[in-house]
Length: 171
Image (cartoon, rainbow, N blue to C red; front, side, top):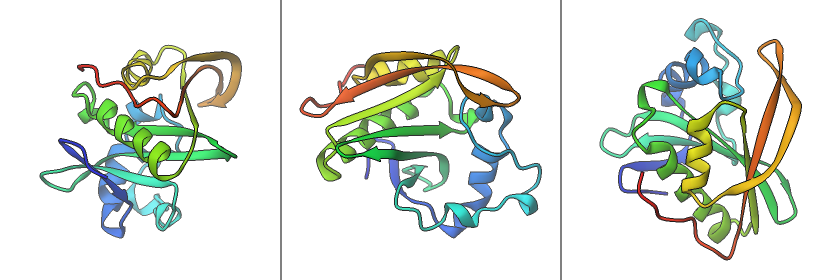
């Protein structure tokens, strides 16, 4: 999958260092994206991310470097949930919106899903904006639904149905 600035494809063995730096070792990312923290590359078990059909690298088109990940999960019939995380060094540049928009096209047009949902921790306004820019709309609020980083977290779900393309609004 491609966008103007990104390539979205499978995780490769050569992605270990970038995945570690952008996701598993980036404490800012781990405040908003559920993933196990790794202090060093040696303690980071990268093997569990390889070969997965539901997990994709988000790469810069020019360099091919992994800057984040996007995945789908909890597929139930014609519905699934997505999650995404970008290294904090890449926040605020529209990459999240670009990746999610293209990933929604993939899920609707190639995988055949009719409804896609996503959630974010209350307070993560950047993720909310990404979802809204991609045409997702508020679905529900769930109080203390997830226990993460030693506290109960409230989450907000957004959803989009197939049959309408993700909106193409400016950043």
